[in-house]
Length: 125
Image (cartoon, rainbow, N blue to C red; front, side, top):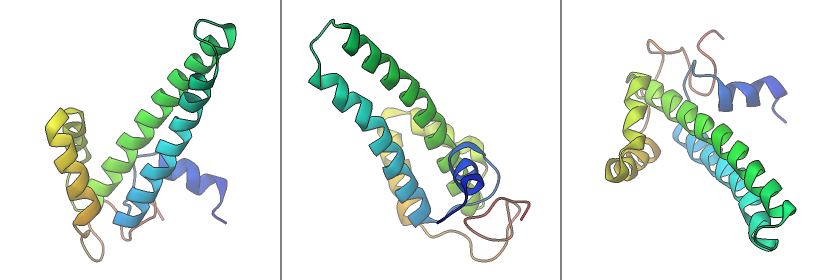
């Protein structure tokens, strides 16, 4: 089982590189975490205190997952030896689908690059 620090690095820090599999699986985990409060929100009566609570939990989860998705994309771009700022294309509606496919399908640069010596690790390891 990975250590807590590895999860914090994977989902909240922009240093280093991640592989295609780590990017896809990390994004899938983020989507599942985001879906839970949305699912719970749909089960309660509209306008109730419980629905307000679940909508707030969903909002907080959405903000955290948005950052996590950006961080995963930045590290995936680093694995392709591209600057992380290119992750901004994920906010362009049609381009974001193409960018997601590119990040999932194209292999990273073998060996070390300017963003780290190996994949799936912070740059300083």
